Image (cartoon, rainbow, N blue to C red; front, side, top):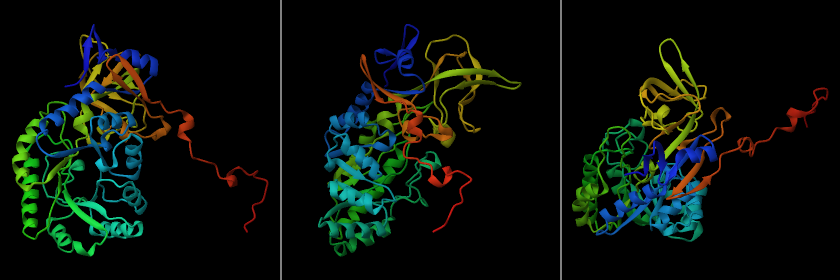
Length: 427
């Protein structure tokens, strides 16, 4: 369910016409519906209310402080993958004891920041990382709570670039290696291994991979029990998909029905890390048609957003529904392209679309997740603004970048601006 609907021939976000937002803020702009976000949070809260759990919103999907604050207000924690995300989470008021930290390449600086913040769990991706944490814990005179990330070697039936729990990926440990670590856990004097973690991928639209992976994790927990190894937390990651085109993803209630009977017998508390499911269909990208172009073999609709604003199509071949802000009659077949100097800078190819004309506003749907968070300044384009709608009020939660923002932190070496008539002398 989302709160983007047509009224009187124009698209609204909740109770505000998106055209009004574009006219005031400019384009391209991301627009988010707080009602949709809250609705998606509540679906999880209701589905798992009878089992001990912690939900950790996966910040990588959308890390705007206002989005984080909405999830924190609901009592959710945060799944982070960098020191920058830890910084954002704390700035948004997230309880450190509701933060879990994954990622294969955490630096010593990042690990110390997480340890100093006293977060709930650091998810261990390698034995070398475990040794690094033990060393930092000793230096900080702290016992660090961790979980071992397992690669359950499951095919999650999603795009290969976002399948993280199958054999051969860089993520996690094998069951064999994890057991070896558990059996010598006493060697790590400054570490308490409290849980297991997995994350099998993203945009998963079937329950089967979750059931298969959870079953493997539960069997491993039972095996550890025989070795008197207690497990407090079982973190099954996130990755639940949304509808971009014709997908019919499972609901949180269906997920609960599938996995809770497996998990209940372990006695473990459950952690789930939804991201895309929470914000994906809660956002749109509004962009303006700059030109229309007719060539010998195809039509082009050229907009002011590019792959620097939304890279999912170029990166994954992703599909996003495209609408006109104003309901139109008739169709054309065209490519929707942006201003970036790459052939991959497109949002649709050879697609049946409304008959857009110059100056129209074009809407790219379901862009709340992995959209602004993956944006860039390629070709020195500024990144879009972000707006949050709450019923009949709108809030600018990220201003549009300026040209000065593009060169923030840069400088020109004095050597490059010396008069050419001067001889340089090396000392």
